[in-house]
Length: 262
Image (tube, rainbow, N blue to C red; front, top):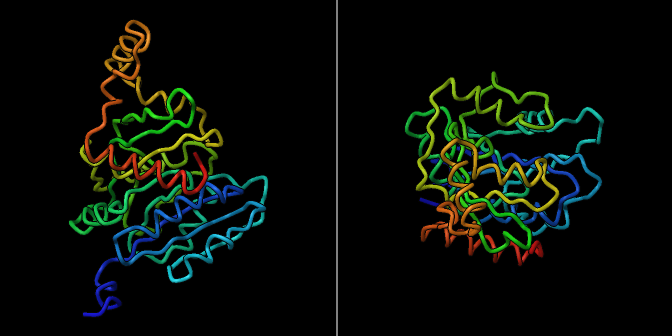
């Protein structure tokens, strides 16, 4: 069996990126796409910024990447742009691929297997979180959401579900719609597949990322104990990564330095 024949035996996965004027950051996410072990994939990039990404994309000419420039309009919400990427996708499966996060080479392979087994959608329950600040630079932590991490969704192609026309929380509402179908949420042993990155130019501020440490009563009490009473925040259990998580963080740091993000 040739590589081409083997490739077509896998459902096609469309990775959807929305971006604008963040070539230096998006370069890392594009490399993450290139490094995916899953063979049958495409990357859809919807860009409504002034910067042109062709200088980077020329390095990936052998990959299936569609670069779509859209004129900047005042009503170009993030939800609207995500829907534009959905309309351009040709895959059987769709995955959100934000331009400022990092993805393990096995992410597509592992999530696609869940859909192959009959689920309509899947997402992670937690991810590694990295905050690019002097205090947190070398201290990644685990951030968890009870209903799943919206930005980690992969789902089967569907013409009836679309993002809300919002500039924030559009992916949270999108995940809620998919939770009405057969949604699989991974347990925390798969945190290593995804690193959420705060770099100062995110849609959300730094408090949004820190809130992952205190988004329940028990988490809040644990946060108070380590951060305010013991005054030793990095002894907090969420800062203790396992072997696979540590390995992902090392890969993230190396690739971030290579992209001159750190």
